[in-house]
Structure formats: C-alpha cells, structure tokens
Image (cartoon, rainbow, N blue to C red; front, side, top):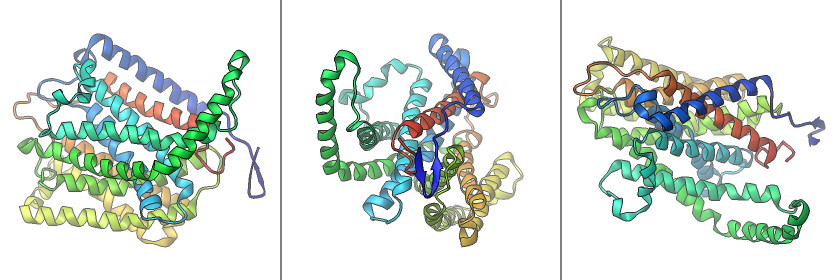
Length: 401
C-alpha cells in the first residue's frame, strides 16, 4: 500500500481485459515481424522501387521520433533552464522517450533490406558525412545510448538497498550493492553532461528528418516541400513534446487510478499555444514567400489533408490552450494534447506518404495488413513495457515501487 494524501492506494494488477487485448495485438505484430525476417520485405509489404519507404518509416520512425520528444523537452525545462515544479513528469517522459526511441531503432532495422549490415554505422570506414540519413542514424543511435544512461538512475533507485539474490548467488549481494552505490554517485556527477547531449542530439535529428525529405525535391507536394522543412519539423517536435507528456500522463493516471497532475500539466500547457503560434507563423511566411498558398484551394487530396492537419493539429488546440480554464480542466487538457499529437502524426504522414509522389509510380502505395500489424504490434509493446516499468520501477511518484 502507498498513501496518497489521506487515501490508501493499491497498485493495479498488470493484466486487465484491455491489457490482454493489447497483448494479443503485440503477439500478432511479432508474428508478422517474424514473417518479415523469414520471407523478406517483398512477401509481407507493398513496398517497391517507387515506394521504398512505407508506414514503417512514416509512423514507426518519423512519427515515433517526434512523439518521443517529451524526454528532451522536459529535461530542457527542468534541468537546463531550471524550471521549478516539473519533477513529477520527468521520469514518465523519460520512460516514454526511452521506449519510443528503442522502437524507432527497431523500426529502422525492420525496414532495412540488409538489416544484418546495420552495425556498419559503427565503423568510420562506412560513414558518409554528407548524407542526411547518416546524420539521422548517428544522432538517433547516440541519443538512444544517452537515454539509457539517463534511465539508469531509475534502475539504481529500484534495486539500491534491495539486492537479495537467491541461494548460492547471495554471496554477490554485497558486490552488487557496492556497484549500485558507485553508479548512484557517479551518475549524479555526470548526468548534466548527458542531459545537454540529449537535447543537442534531439534537435539535430528532429530537424534532419525534415532535411531528408527536402532532398526528395519535386516528389513532395509543394504544400509540404520547403527549404525550411527542417525548421518546421523541429518546431513541431517542440510542440508535441509537451503535448505528449500531457497525453501520456493523463492516460497513465486513468490507467493506474491516480489523481491527475493537473497543476503541473497545465503549466506545461502554457507553452503550447506559443510554440503553435511560432510554428504556424513560420508556415504562413514561407507559403506567402513561395506563393504555395495557391495550392490550398485546389480541392485535391493534398489540399484537403493539409487543411485537416492545420485545423485539427494547430487551430483547435491553439484555442483550447489559450484559455486557463481549459488548461485546468482534465477533459479539455487531454483533448487539446491528443489533437496536437494527432496533428503531428498527420503532418509526418502527409510529408512521408500522402504528399509523396514518385516520378514513375504506376499505382499508389497502401500498406499490407502485415505492415499494419507490425506497426500496431510495436505500439502495443511500448504500452505493455511502459505499464511494466511503471508498476515495478520508481517512475511515477504517487505509486509504491
């Protein structure tokens, strides 16, 4: 039992009916993933020479990287600019980012034709410094490592003073306790360096994912193809970083029967309309400068998707987060955060898939069921792992661990 105020709190069990459904989706995804590695990309995807990238890159990687931005955004607010009162959301955001980037790496591995050569990125002789994709790969790989180091204090807190190995292994109890104490002291001394590294690396690869699509030139519809696409990707990551922290926190509170952290979350929500305003202003200035606003009124699928993206992901949440009474209301807070998350997902899908037209394509791309199953399976595994760590590690303050 853990005490929250004057109320007694008991941690929920891991498996619930909803969790069993998510476990089933994860199992189907893993089976589809196994088929991909046994039979190859051609057997389980609708990818071809004109569409070499599908939802595994657009959703698992591009969206995954953006939605994991809460880790470096909360680290920036709490540790670099020393914002007060955000402690309770740092570790949940860090867990989300760690799991998100882990599965981003798995998404890249899954999508590579010669996945067994992925280790080449570690050897300088295979490097291509002029490649935007190389920069993305190196930054993501480096940031995943930084995230694991940032997550280590949570592991240390979980086991420090509690090592109790069974049987003959108990002779190692003292060794592991000393190791945990050394790690605890050492990590506290160097953690600031890794937090700064994490923020820098995140900004680099968030923007470089936009650079990657700038290189696609005329294959991208003019509504999204712009020289400032790297800036737009970075600004949208800033926005969705805070929104994702709010989104995740409110869902976790509901799932674990906890009181929502409305005070902290509403303070984070204050930054969202400012960032949304900057993001939208950059888009408007760019469109006016290049006369691409003319494409907004063509009635094409591209113009319709752009309007949906802006209305759902920018306009409505901007209005919601502008008013304090909505920021302090859990329902409106969740609605606004969910819309920002959906808006960024739509943006990445528009840039990577819907607004992408190969020069010689003879048919449009639509993902195979096995592609969808793998993506849904990855998302399901992230949810299951988040639940496991939240229930068994000191991630959420109000839960006994």
